[in-house]
Length: 169
Figure 1: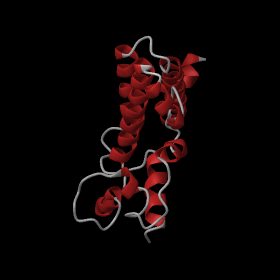
Figure 2 (figure 1 turned 135 degrees about the vertical axis):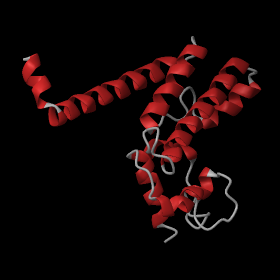
Figure 3 (figure 1 turned 180 degrees about the vertical axis):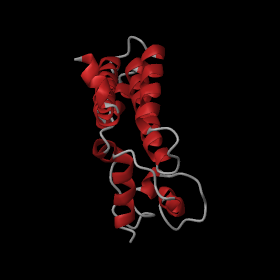
């Protein structure tokens, strides 16, 4: 049970699903009575499974990780006193964690889709951090997400209102 539950939670996050009402405890990693959030606990069944790196979890959910530099390079940047690059690396980690939180939140609350929250986060970061090295990748990701949403809406229109397609032709 403590092996499958983290995998179920991650799969639900990846596909934008909400857990059934009685399953909310899964989003907190299982049997911990304290309802604080610890992603490592959540994705390892309360540390009963082997912990994986945050970058691996993010990759499994198609969330960007270590956008500007790999983790091992940050120490070198600090020693070289390249503070702008260090700040950019830290900002990337914060952005990735916020995007992960958006996915996790949807496990418990279906009212706002993870894609909608992701779009808002990306839009705000792009506005606020103009000129950063990771912005081009985030803009491309946002454009791809928007195209996916447009395609889904078009498919829904064909299914739910086929007369719209006929009139447009």
